[in-house]
Image 1 (cartoon, rainbow, N blue to C red):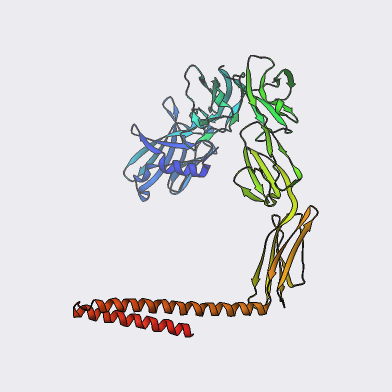
Image 2 (tube, rainbow, N blue to C red):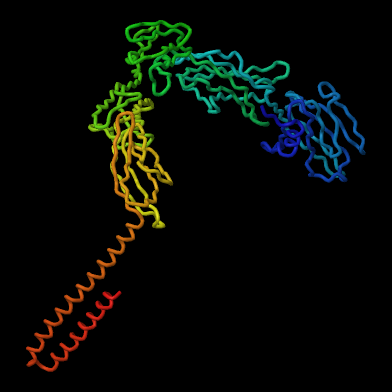
Length: 558
């Protein structure tokens, strides 16, 4: 509640609450405060005033004297209720302490000047703000649709009597004769004359009034607005709607737990429910939930809950238990022979659409592998992953393709320095074949065994022409192959033969070109009747041909 301080209000009244009413000045003062009632308001100069006298209207045409001021001396003559309550200020204003409602009358200031006597009557009005504002006799709960006394708001000891306004969530309520009824009454204290206003609110609640705050307020003639402390009531109503909630992990899968919760909008809420678990009926009291543990795919179905005291009010939900089973055949460690066929099957049993992916040695494959004729390159670890929503399962097999070793190629190369021979034996087989040579070599080198393949190298320096064998074997069999390797001297003879062959070839080319030239010259002599320009042209062509023959001859000499 908000109240102006007494001193603040008093100052306000002295400065602004003096007004003219029907030719009579009215002074408004606060109950219990000291009033300073002005005299003449400067109509006469203080130095001209000889005597100042205050009196009051006693009613029935009678007046009562209060005090007189003469030659700066004040003589108090007040009796009865004003005895000991009056005095005069320096400006001749009447000071009246402990203002009461009985002080609401006319006080007159009579001023005697040297040549004039004047009276200044002032009508005094006393105001008092309510001592308090509170709601009492309030109901603990309201029933929807039923007009019920919500509470009584009382504004005590005010003047004039306070007007009370009821509010819901700070919004004023107005009586409508249906859902809102407001009855006000005023009680006057016979001793003080102060008024206490009572206002009774009857209210027909709605469901949305749950948690609403009800207050009452009053705005008095003077002072700030007063607002009572809020009251919150319980709104009761019968259940109109019921719902079933499924509380579980998403997605719900086999082995999980699922909790069924029955939700009703009644207030107070129902405390007993029936849960319809497919073919079973379970009654639950003092709770609104039921938990099904370790669900399986057979748990899938329609579930219901209803009120025990009204089975016709029910709610239902579909529950789906997601599951995923896979079977890869064959699986585990599989050993096959090269050339065989292998049928790979994947069986899936699930509650929805599936996505399948394959990898070999952790490298993704575009599609499911097929093995119509196994090769050593098919060896590896195959893994399939099946996903169904958030469910995922994997299965794998480790395939080993085995067989007797085969030498795919036996080749030789000259080393970079031209002094050695490098023999290369390309082998395929599994398990890894053992490789041996019929001669001893240096710089043995073996490639990694990958996809059933291995490459074995040796470096040799033969002193004579040799026939070298590469021999391979494993537990399934063996193979061998030979290659001829010439000595370094034989290689030099081979080079000599190559040079001689080149020279002979160039000599033969020279002879052929010369013969062609002779034939051409013979034909040229027979056609000497042609013009000189043509002869000149022939001479140039002959010159070019002679230069070509000379060039070939030089190459032959080289």
